[in-house]
Image 1 (cartoon, rainbow, N blue to C red):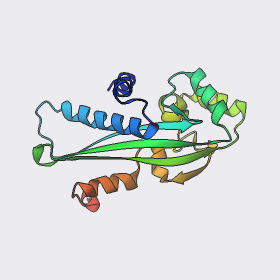
Image 2 (image 1 turned 90 degrees about the horizontal axis):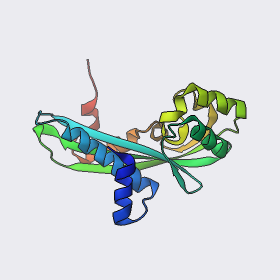
Image 3 (image 1 turned 180 degrees about the vertical axis):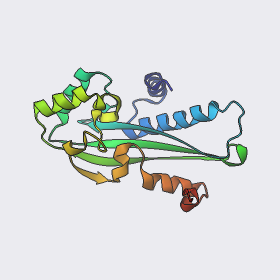
Image 4 (image 1 turned 30 degrees about the vertical axis):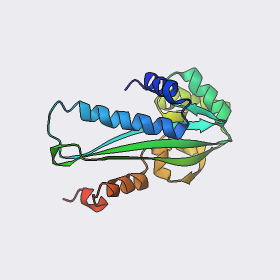
Length: 182
């Protein structure tokens, strides 16, 4: 999915997208792209697409990709709170055909420690923040730089488990039926 082109086209048609609408759109398109790669192959299951973006000061931040951008973001967000938006789109493709689709966005407020310039430089040099929304992770090297999360904590890793459970149930699938049992 060409994310910048997709967002630009949607905004040209509907006006500016807020972060929740943007990640919901991208999550849907990613799930549909996976469905499109099946090339007639039967799949009996659920297809999940997801996308995340971090917003602070009214600006939406996706993946920084470049070290200098990641550093700028960290300088601006240290000691502050922003909101991570995670979009989810679930396609019911049981019995080898598309039945229904549902989607939702989860949000979590993330508060950052007042990290030092040296900590920021070391974190950026690790490469970890370059390919993640908001230039941070909670489940790896960036975790100690987060002082609190308000909302579903799994949202911060890009997949809100409680939201996914709700979507699964909307498709009349029992959550526990998805558990792997040996």
